[in-house]
Image (cartoon, helix red, strand yellow):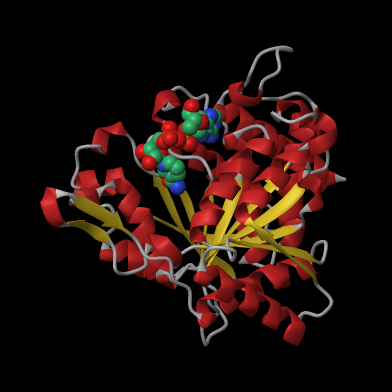
Length: 370
Ligand code: NAD
């Protein structure tokens, strides 16, 4: 069996705790002979800063670029708040995404049947919800030039950033959205602010042109971002794939995350362009941060990390069946009311991080045996 080279970067605070549970699941697949993983581990974020004086070393960048996929935990925390901006843990992740060319961020917002009451919306609005948000990740206003804060007359200052998108940047992210939609519900809603921004006008034109030329079987709708945020709260099940830029995607994906109830349940994937050898650079991570408030207590929910592993199996390693196994095991655990404290509903006792990992493994055993 060909082994898959995975770079594991646990990160800070709860990162290593939830990563341990994902590693248990990887071990389970290896011990059953289903997938063989070659695992390299590295430091990133605050833990890398503490040891090497930088949140991301060249060595980690090289390992990431050589790997079949990166499994990332979470970084940051108050311990590093006084560190120079460019050496903050968060910068380690931003730089890693940039050096791997990860331009597409995929964030599913799925409501598990057993957790339908955890949403802030009425159950009938979110029951069966399954949205995929495709966010452009390395362009737009977060990176556009010119940017800065400068002095103007009378000792006043002005802060400014630039939103710009080229045809190439729009087309490559739109392709990801259409390809995903083709495997799901065949619907893409492209979100922009074309009524007031020229970059949005170009975005809309290029997204439409690509669909007309290559994806005529996909239903395309355009929506302004203000309307999209209203629609996500009013009637979220109308969406299949939402395609949007870096800034709007940042906000809308957090909004959609809250429809599902808990941050501890949400995985994500970031993908780059296919290289000549056919490899797509990729990084998988939970949506949540390093949760310093609950770190070291064995109470963090490891499901987002384990579902990130499932996304990795599906989107990078061609192991769809094994990814589905993980999804089914998580469903089963939840339906039996085995819950960490963040999703606990008051019957019995919540389980800890490692007990949740063990419960998922025991369900994998049961499903695999049938
Ligand atoms: P956070 O996501 O870490 O925590 C927000 C809330 O959700 C907290 O109450 C936390 O206890 C809870 N939570 C998070 N993950 C959980 C889990 N697995 N199980 C149960 N509860 C969970 O966000 P924050 O507190 O705003 O940020 C903390 C640090 O994480 C900051 O330094 C921030 O910059 C960083 N951060 C990192 C990433 C990343 O690594 N990609 C993402 C977001 C924030």
